[in-house]
Length: 210
Image (cartoon, rainbow, N blue to C red; front, side):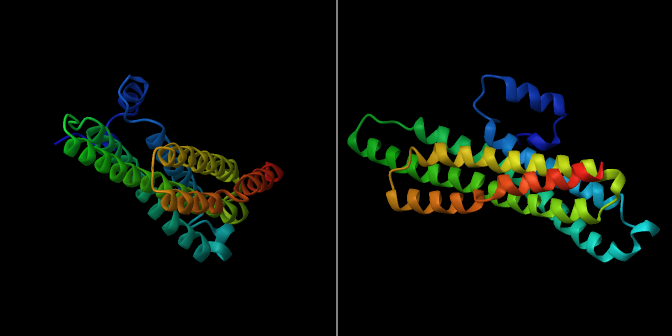
């Protein structure tokens, strides 16, 4: 059984990322960025839970922690899933194409694999939006000594969102199903709308507390 990326040392992951191998690549990095953001939100929460100074927000912080941890684990799973779907796309492109039947089967397999490969970064983008939203209460209610970590969390989440969007778009460019492409582009546009402004709002909120 192939070892999971997420069980390898960071240096090994970076070595694989830097290599000529097509995966892991930008899709995995997008998921990792979001997971790092979620982990930092969890850090802020864990530095706030049980502190007398923040007694009035304990319930809110505990709920926030549960959400950030769920998103962290989801994004780690998506990091692995991105490698798997890219492998499927690569296998489809390597299918035989000597006869007309083989060519047709190859085209169909490629299109199906590309749709699957689009779904993963779209899920990453959706999860990153949720992480970004969590950064507001983390910065507002969390331990003030960790407010900069809430700011970094927002930057990581927004980077993950934008990175995932690029991976969606490159896959859509090779998909022939126009209805699918139009629907997914609209879905992506809705996710991206206003998020750069939200990141700046969080950054300003954090900077004012430093």
